[in-house]
Length: 293
Image (cartoon, rainbow, N blue to C red; front, side, top):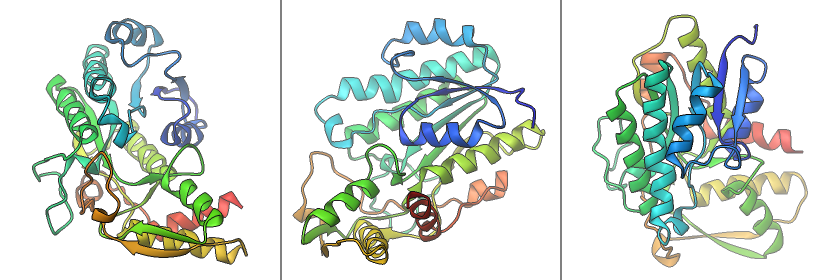
């Protein structure tokens, strides 16, 4: 496909930004801007710099994702996760281009027993969750063409994430305790990038679904303990050291930020509106790990 579409990707070295660059490089002209080139904490810079880049589509893959650290630096978290997305949305409206933005399962409190739908009322438990929800609200207020894609438990072979942390700790320690009462869907960054590419393609060919907020995670569910077990199984298959993993409740592993016990997101609406589906989390994890070895 001719690279005629100019896509501005905000975020450069994060796991999702890298996955997007890899997936979209052959389908569009990518303009990639990291924090050193486009500071999300400087609204005036965003307003002046982005129009000069002339994008046909803006993808915001940048965020303050240090959940626990956000509790002690709320102003920074809100500047990056709330104020900046609002400015991006306003700028997108001015330019007449769509915005794709990624949000999180942490906008919910986790008290619901079933998977959350887009119609459920958010009630975040943490500064991180509140800042991401504020970013969603700012984008909606701008009232332009946008996709807010809520995802969960993102991992890849780059950056800092649960997969890489577990691979290291499982080989370093004889025993490891992992929380077993928080349930969600581990989602490979490449899965999100692939789904994003499909959404862009449907828009390009004039067959988009409704703009708005959607849930985008891998299918299936597990706990952090179950996720760790799956990672450990791969280490054993590779004949590498692997700790004995013991399940513990969240109460036994207190953290500065409160996390939802139920992070399951219902992705039915994305399939119905945009005809985009995701693989089961185990299949995606296997594909990710196969590319690592």
